[in-house]
Length: 154
Ligand code: HEM
Ligand code: HEM
Image 1 (tube, rainbow, N blue to C red):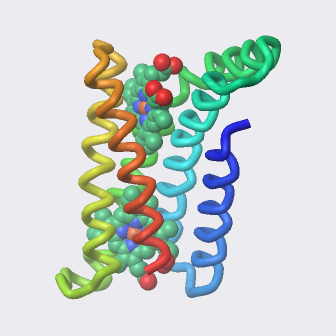
Image 2 (image 1 turned 90 degrees about the vertical axis):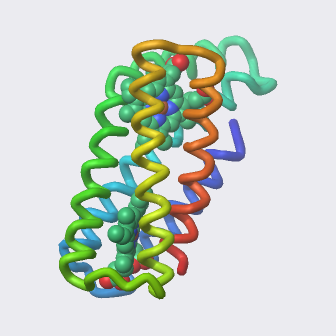
């Protein structure tokens, strides 16, 4: 089992704690939906790491089968995550306006830009896979993981 399952679970718990410890407006609901869909897609990395790790052949096959089963919805959940985040951002900007000294807004904006690139690289990967695009898609996933965590804990 990859340590990433555990790391993702900790992220989820921190996010749930942050979300439920304050007032839950409509903008927060869409932010949370974006985050849950992102985490669901990101868990693909944990599954891939597990398949590549030192586990029995039987378990590898089990994980590979599961991975193949969820692949068709990966592109829809990833695109849905972006749509939720864009709705979240529109609500946030119409509610609070644009304050550049607000760290929450700045980290959110950065996360939003990285998410647009991540989903775009995903679609490029879907139509034409190359080694470079595979690494780009994965690196953007890691970057968004860090930025989203920062955005939520700040
Ligand atoms: C990957 C992208 C994003 C994710 C996953 C995300 C997720 C979230 C979540 C779950 C919250 C509620 C938790 C909390 O208050 O700590 C939140 C709050 C917030 N987000 Fe985002 N967000 C993203 C992008 C953005 C963008 C693009 C903006 C700016 C336009 C933004 C601005 C804000 C602000 C200002 C708050 C605080 C709202 C408040 O305290 O009432 N976020 N975000
Ligand atoms: C929230 C957005 C997304 C995240 C976090 C994400 C994350 C990932 C991860 C971690 C992998 C495995 C990478 C590896 O180890 O090589 C992957 C693979 C892949 N992703 Fe995404 N992805 C997202 C959106 C998308 C979208 C919108 C598409 C559009 C088609 C897409 C297409 C693909 C494809 C084709 C693969 C290769 C699958 C395979 O070889 O089994 N992704 N993605």
